[in-house]
Image (cartoon, rainbow, N blue to C red; front, side):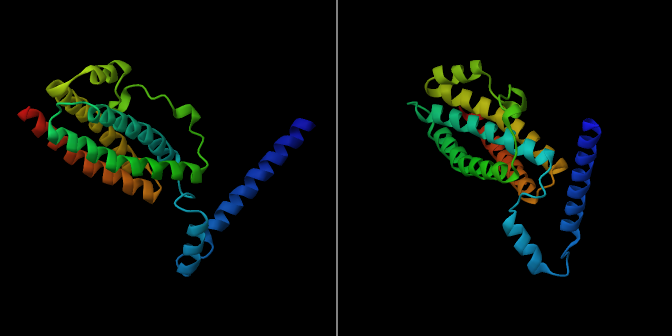
Length: 198
């Protein structure tokens, strides 16, 4: 009997939540734009996040964090090509605020990302060996290796962002993914041009 009662209670709760969800989506609608604005301010960018949005934000922030680590590594070296130094600084300047934005979204979405941590080198992520090689490289070799690794890294980011554009639901997350695709595709072309001159 206890089991049956628990199952009935659970079903009732699911039904009530479902009704509450329906009520939330149908009330106000397009007739009262002021109501829409009020509801979006109380649940910012968040209520419409799906699994793809959560996966994108969770993985891309880790991806960005590694790009910043790679840039910091390069910026700590002497004898690096000035154009590569400038690129590393640009990557940091673009990606640090994006990490903060994605952290904020994940918090707003109440996302449990514990089981998504520890990406391997899928998605263009560098392995520990790759990172050590960059750490050890000097001068022109460091410039070249950074560009080669960051091209691969950016290609992975573009693929991840395209997944979000195709499957994401949250408009802010999709917009960020589109920005990443545009910015990093441009940077890939820049890095390929730089590599050809080193």
